[in-house]
Image 1 (cartoon, rainbow, N blue to C red):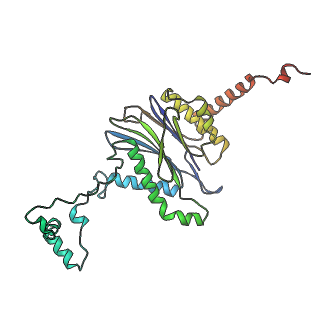
Image 2 (tube, one colour):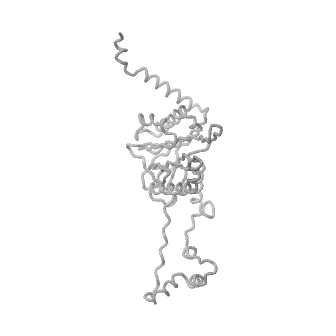
Image 3 (cartoon, rainbow, N blue to C red):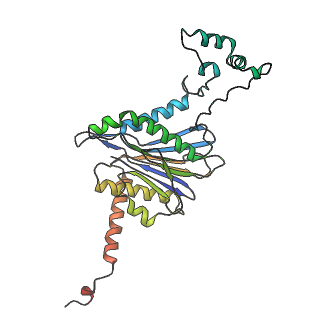
Length: 302
């Protein structure tokens, strides 16, 4: 299991994730759940992942493949041409002749009404947006959702038969130049919901233990640093209650309109920030308990 949280602020975005994965009590390992993509200077994305590790890794691999293109890093994806889209199969004389004479000429010959006129080129279906071509953040979230569903489908029945699940969920945050920054939670079914001022934080994974601090203290007006501290304590108290969540914890801060990660840190289990945060939080809880109103029988004991 894992736990990831992201916070939508007026000042920007904050991301936090743990690094623990487990396939039983005797097989626990660490993998980063936070991934940063900047496919062009006008856009920046951060992707948090939870769920089946094989699914999340396959999704990340496909994103990297699409960003790099078929010829390797730095090469834009190839656009299919008419010749490649309508390449004839071997042994087909009619299709071979149509290819030699040109697809458009063959179409014109087949229609008497079009004699002497040049037939318009058949429109090519536009490729759906990806991280490089999306104009809006929700289009990028749809892209990640489509990949996730495509990765899960071939293994869904086999995983069900064995009592497992290929499902994974994601949080995608970032900004595209000209648009505001934002966050989307992408469900295993591929659909997504966005963070709003009324619901400024999104969680995936083992979320229930770390939600109370976010509910009580969190709001869009926090500074990036205060929100980062709040997300860290959300991680720490979750770890205290659930052993499937654990360090290293990662934090990333993304200022609004900056299209950059201003701070990114990784805190190991022995980090002073983790132990000190837990000590101060526990002390505040104990102080709050002592300050709670007394019961009536305490005020007027028999």
